[in-house]
Image (cartoon, rainbow, N blue to C red):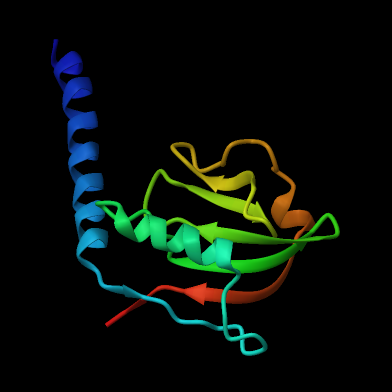
Length: 131
């Protein structure tokens, strides 16, 4: 009976901690900082994903966006703001390709397990900034 009670309490405590982290993320004021010095603008579809994430409560906007070359194509890795979110990869038109990491297990969605072995980082194109 003690073990059953323990099994019921552990998920509750875990959920409580995750909620605290989400609330902390919600209260942070994230500003856009463009890192790409060649164009000084983000691709429109990337900016749209960031803006849509900022509208949600708590915010689901990425904390960072990096450009990679993957299988001969330019792709963008969106790093999630918190626990249990997927870190998603999008193509140049912002069509979701896969999630190499993140999620409940941390192993992504299983659709591109080879991403970090094959992809080459080009540059960071956006990073959330708190003030």
